[in-house]
Length: 509
Image 1 (cartoon, rainbow, N blue to C red):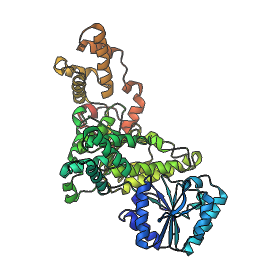
Image 2 (image 1 turned 60 degrees about the horizontal axis):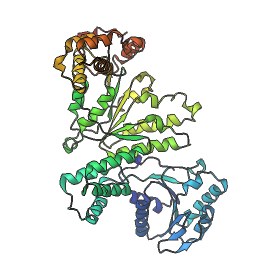
Image 3 (image 1 turned 90 degrees about the horizontal axis):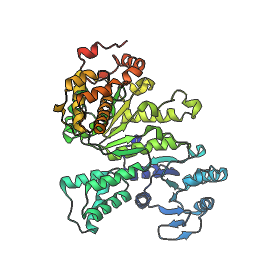
């Protein structure tokens, strides 16, 4: 039986989990982790508790027992023969052995299967350790896969204390200690140690901002997740009063008081609507409302060319997000990432469907405080199971801004570009820009700034009016798709803005 994601096996510590498998007679385990040293330390504790012999193997050093005796068996085939000669009640940790299994050498696979069968009768356990899951179909039912989760906040404490002691710093306590540990969550123990040490070198102290900056670089390496530093707040978004109130009502959802009150863990938010109406801005502002880090997921990069790599990518995303939690996970243009699901069976062997199924299962079952904000321009392309109740806490539709929202957007954009809104007729500008999105209003003002700079004067209302004479908004070029989107949203999604007479009179069908 194969176990995939770690979130399916919560509640039992990894050491105890491994002990249970060995006691139950499992002869083959596959640990997925980039932390060799941490895994080695855990396996040593397991062997000590069970009173088993312990051997480590690598292609460089061969087979080594815990007292330093070396058996010359560097070849991956030769080591299997040597394992048969080892005494009963033995654990063998095979480092990077998955790389040889990836070649699907039929002789090696056959030999490994025979060794596993024999090991079961001799109380021996083979543990393959790799940074990623790479298992041929022939061994899927021979090796039990365990995801070795990233270290928790508590597990990072000794790492922090070690750096503090070695650098002769004053002990970090209270809220400052929590901030430093929070900034390191999502890193391996080695990465956390390096980040702490770098902070000491740079600032003579352990600065959570430096640690968080290093974490952002580490998370970005795999190209799947990115930590976004954002200054956006709800005040930088014009309108969307219903959506803003919904978020503000939940701004304390990740506090201890909320847990004690019995509030359920928030699942997430789907924001759909017309391009340029503030969906991405809202995703960024959500992290500020909750006061947690913002992770951005490039859903298109999950799907890799190698067999099994897409599933491994998703596991990596989930593991990292849950380690950093509480956090906001922003998935931009969700419909593009999961396009082609209907034809997945014939185009990619069903990979997209399997990844999608795993993702929505995690959305439904997750208990860690990872708040998902998914944005979509064309929600009709998403499969219905993504949109059903239980996946998201709420789904909002963002329409073109009404008169009051356009006035607020003009005020925000003029201030953003260093001008005084009092110098402009905001009401008249709002009337002149009916049918424009927020991003289009910004584009108009930027163009007016260039015109004013070219003319050697500040842009005026007339300058803006001249820009608007040749401006064709998206609501005209894409009027039919927009009307279809409005028609779909009616009765299916909550409007992000209080419905005024102006918006109610818009054509919907």
